[in-house]
Amino acid sequence: MRSFITYIFFFLLVMAGSPSLICLGQDTSYAPVNPSTPERVKVNNIYIIGNQKTEKNIILRELDFTTDYYYDWETFLGIIKADEQKIYNLRLFTEVEVTPLFTGDEEVEILISVKERWYILPSIIFQLADRNFAEWWTNQGRDLSRVNYGIRINHANVGGRNEKLRFMAQFGFTKAFDLLYSKPYIDKNQKHGLAIQLTYTDQKTIPIASEFNRQVFFTNETEDILRKNLSGALRYTFRRTFYNFHFATLGYNNTWLNKDVLVENPNYLQNEGNSLRYFYLQYSFRHDRRDNVAYATDGELLQLTGTKYGLFSSEDINEIEFNVVANKYIPLSDKFHYAGGLTAAWFLSNRQPYTLVRGIGYNPNFIRGYELNVIEGQQLYVQKNSMRFKFLDVAFDLSSYLRLEQFSTLPFKMYLSANFDHGFVTDRNRIPENARLTNKYLFGYGAGIDVVGFYDSVLRFEYSFNNQGEGNFFFNFKAPF
Image 1 (tube, rainbow, N blue to C red):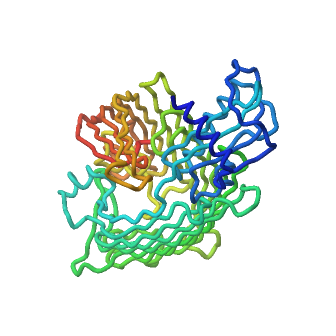
Image 2 (cartoon, one colour; image 1 turned 180 degrees about the horizontal axis):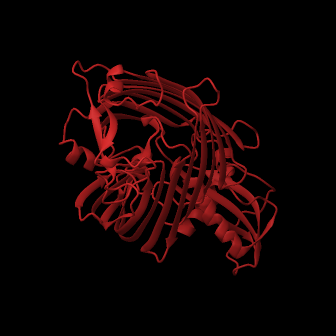
Image 3 (tube, rainbow, N blue to C red; image 1 turned 90 degrees about the vertical axis):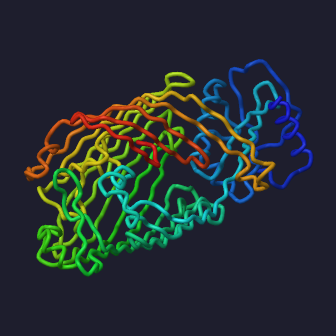
């Protein structure tokens, strides 16, 4: 029934000469036919409907086929499926459908139908300032003063060219102002892009160290601002192929510290003053072939990053960091899939300013069951595993309640997950207070329920144990990897 309606709709659009159609290639006869499965097909024209704001070239950039060229039929079906997913992963549309319509034994027209999202999303910030919900609930005693509030405005499709504009004004536990503008393509061939970001934060309570694998927070008696941070970055993007991205970022960071912090931790900045100023240069390569960037069930992600902190001899720091992220998602059936992920980080020197300290417990490097802990060091390795079963997949029609098409459908998926994570942190300084978990093999396991909802939002409810015999309930707002 759906294919019949598609043919009729396509035929009426062509006959009406609709201005919303995008046509590439030669004119053909549009009477649809149903031949037997061909060995090969040629694409005559490509039509796009539903893109009221998004420019056609943003969609066409994701296509791995062109007009006036013959493709093996089975190969072509795979290309169409992959292109559907690439267009969806632009995160500009709630629905994407690429349909081949036969106009001859070996000729097709392509109809790309999209349903646009609502691109301007003002939202109220009301979130915990801590690393995760369990940290706030257990370690910080459910302290409501540790809440951030404010407003965030996101424009996900400025000018219809997939440009992003974000402004944030945040108050509460951490005051922050953030401005980001990114343009994915600045050239005709759509390979080069630029982004700029400016961020300011200040805090009256900050973590100054870790003891017994828990963060130690400090507030002085007069509740003065203890730390201010101003940073800016310019990022260049090169997208040579569909799935491979190169990023080069030049940034500047200026951290000011109240001298009371240095009384509590004289090594906080690793220099003689109370400020840390430096430029940094970062290169990152990303191969991203996930079916859904918010909650993947098929594909892979590989990201390699190198960062040089301090570009000039007069600066306060001279440090190099390497990071690796490698995730694999394997569908086992319509209901089951496996997700595995590896993250690793290395600093070359033995000590870093506390603003750069890494470890298990800081996103994305965590082991389920150790959400209450931070295990800090100069090298870390974490490997995560989930076996997931999709037991609910529904979509609610809200069109009778909401007239806005962008909110007319509410998708809802639920997965049951069985999880096992393990890893290791190397602390070359072997701090006695943290010796229980550093330089030791760690693992955690448990089960959970993942909820994937509107606009790819994710909620996770998990109960996990670790190899220290500790168990707890954990609640998170993002996919684990």
